[in-house]
Image 1 (cartoon, rainbow, N blue to C red):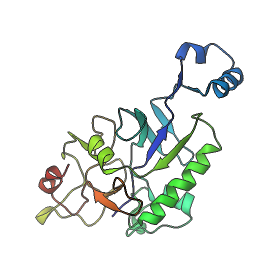
Image 2: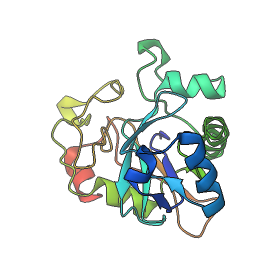
Image 3: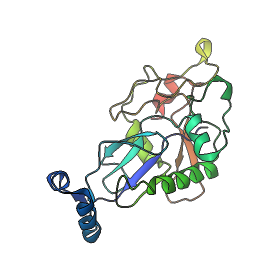
Length: 212
């Protein structure tokens, strides 16, 4: 299983766009801290690892919205933060998705990334990275076609995953949410239970379509 899409949850208090753009940034941050507000966040955010995240409105389980990775986490990104690479297919290049990440290590990755990005204060307010819940994954994967996904069965069995971003984006701009490597998700009401969703390069499109 992989551990690839990560959710970044945010506070839900905004400064109006015009207020943000027409005053000195330092003054706005001072006012924002006093009022417990934050500037309106951008639709696309690139974090300290170079991961590109899309802002998803009405994300279940959050405060109306949150960011989710547009691509699976690459081996290079995981290696940079964790100083190790558990993947099964290292020889084919660092742009392949990291896989064989344990739930414990996935949560450690989230905690370390939260700490690293908090130092940048690029988003303002409070935020944290986490694994998507089962509900969040199904929300993001809904209506995603299997066309172009890295899947395979029978005569079309693939030998391994492909580089991140191989499949076309879905309606939310997310690549490879179906196929390639599975996504590790948390189960509601549990700190220790996880499941892998989305299928991988070894399963058929029929199987994946039945489980979205």
